[in-house]
Image (tube, rainbow, N blue to C red; front, side, top):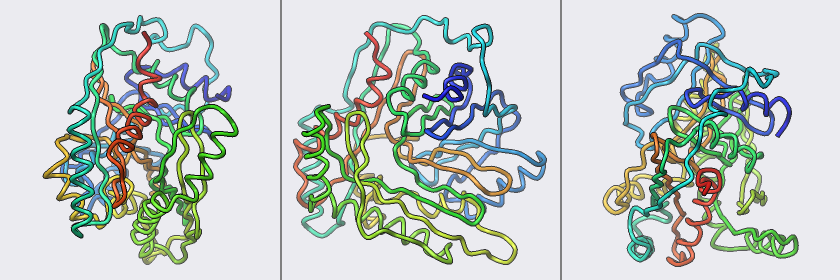
Length: 378
């Protein structure tokens, strides 16, 4: 953790919003305004609605939010009263949350028994075999109940220590460390980094290198990953004058897993005098095949009928937008909804034709470890 990042997170409290990654970020303090979005990402006037709100608030405005997975679900964006990007912090200035006593007792309960979730994976494979869709992302949940209030700021700091290459976020109780860039807009430049395909890391350099090579050569994982890359390229293409999509993914490693990722870069196409806002790109992209499935509509319909899970903000876009239309939005995975002494963790696995239910269960457990390592401190 860099000195600047350490200072930022030392200054953060449970009520602050946090967006911090390997190249810096910010802490948002207080609430200057809320931009209500009653139709969520399904609102065709979403970008204009936010732009109008920014006009009323004045120049230099920035808003932060976490959209629900359900595109039609209402939500809001928070405009912080103060945005802190660089703050040398003395001990006397550090957050009062540093002195809170965190919980030391925890119980964990899965949303459905393991064997039932494996049966859902098998049902998804059967649906793929019948031609209903090519991929579906099936998620499950674990509820953590602590013996005292969970100190959100402590969890955020630990997440960033454990996963410094991810973007650590905290927005209204939604906390996580996302490895996946949904979209970033900076002027006319746009970037995305779709992620799909996972293998465990064991901490032995030779074994982990062998596992990463196996992931890169895996027909199953490469096919699953390509579906996600294709969905991102299709969504961004109409907005871009040019779009660079590499022909093959790369492996990138986190603390306990390695993933396949493909960096997509483009130049936006101006419409008249204006470029599309990052929110237009977010609305066009979500949900990608990495969190929903492919083709999207039949996969989502199957999930609605079978998943037995309320996703909330899990796997929805989380990030920020400013009054110029720039911003960065992450996929809200490796995340938890924290409320007092309770936290709900969700993890999903991409199911394709040759998915194995037992292996998918293990993959979901690996993904849960990201949050459990920061949350559960017995």
